Amino acid sequence: MSAELTTKYGKGWSPEQLRHCLRAAENFPDEQIVYTLCTKLSWSHFRKFIFIEDPLKREFYTEMCRTAIVH
Image 1 (cartoon, rainbow, N blue to C red):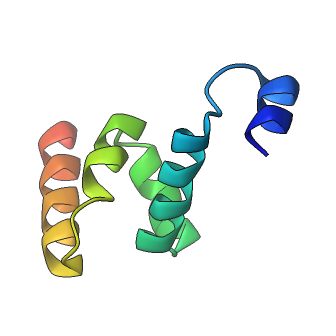
Image 2 (cartoon, rainbow, N blue to C red; image 1 turned 180 degrees about the vertical axis):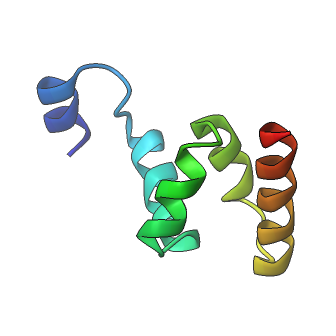
């Protein structure tokens, strides 16, 4: 899949990147929340958040970054 996406869309679709995408989808299953966060946060933020195991902690830090960036 990595090779197919790289051929079609260019660099940035390594197997590791696809694992990060999968983990992000598992940790942020609500598409509307992801869309809202994407308007405020970078992919670098998401990559940090997806490795926080505790959902409450993950939500806390996500919200802290979101509000810090907005203000």
